[in-house]
Amino acid sequence: MSKIPVIVDCDPGHDDMMALVIACCSPELDVKLVTTVAGNKPLELVTRNALNVMHYIGADHIPLAEGCDRPIVRPKDHVIPKLAEFRRHTDSIENGAHGASGLDGFTFPENNPKKPIGIRAVEAMANVLRESEQKVTIIPLGPLTNVALLLRCYPHLISKIEKISLMGGSSEFVFTRPFMEFNTFVDPEATKIVFESGVPIIMYGYDVTYTVLYDQSVIDRIASHDNQTSYMVSQLLKAFMYRHNGAFKWLGLTDTCPIHDACAVAGVVDPSLITQSRYLHVDIETGGDFLNGATVCDYANTTHLKPNVQVVYRMDNERFFDLMERCSAGGK
Image (cartoon, one colour):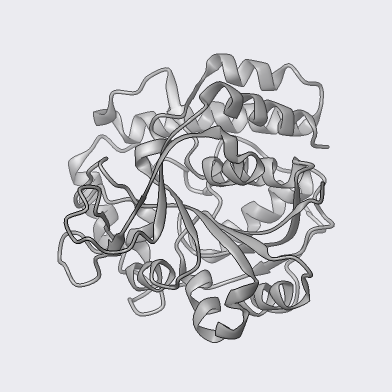
């Protein structure tokens, strides 16, 4: 069986870290390219984090291209008021769930030789699509800025995209400002372009990611493998549980934690991990004061519009954790 060619677009982030480990260490996938986009942290930090993770797990052969450092339309700092409001409404620990570096909890070796390639993400993504004999699956794990620009700049290559498997949004798991799902909020206009593109979309939003919760037993299973990838993953999962649950105390999580972005990669590796989903029509709010970037899912079919998104609600958690362990053990 041939490998699935994929592009991973990310903004690491602890959950992006786990997603990269699954993508790069799964024999089912052929990661053609990793791209970065400003989201969890500014572009410089998320790019550094992605390079560090890829080098540490032995994925230096996979090219990485830097992408957009701001949304398509909105100011670079438009997310700052959201973060300030968030801190007023919750018991956020300092520097949020991912820490000052965007990947707090592990010290990577200095002088990493891996560098970004010499072209920007959108051009690199177009090159992969153009040169691939198979259709390519795109896996966005951050704001959709790079992907939206790809669709607008290279419309003739849309037919080369198999599907978009993304982490973002929510359906019945209702958030309002300041608790909007972050990826869709950061660039609502990009989100709208992607969701209206006609490309098949699988959406792993908060409805599913807050049901796939790892605990200390999963960390211990991963840590039991004697390689540096498993050690890195276990340390960062432990740090993320502390930071995430400290930042989102109102969720009531103590000994468990979501690993959001990894869901969108795991579902590409093994679609049978999805145990509950619905095909729905999803609109994107871009003109509201409170719900910009909201994924408005017509789960009651009141509009009678054609479904454009497969919205995932549940996954096989135990097999998901087995995959996390297998891929961590398979790294460097």
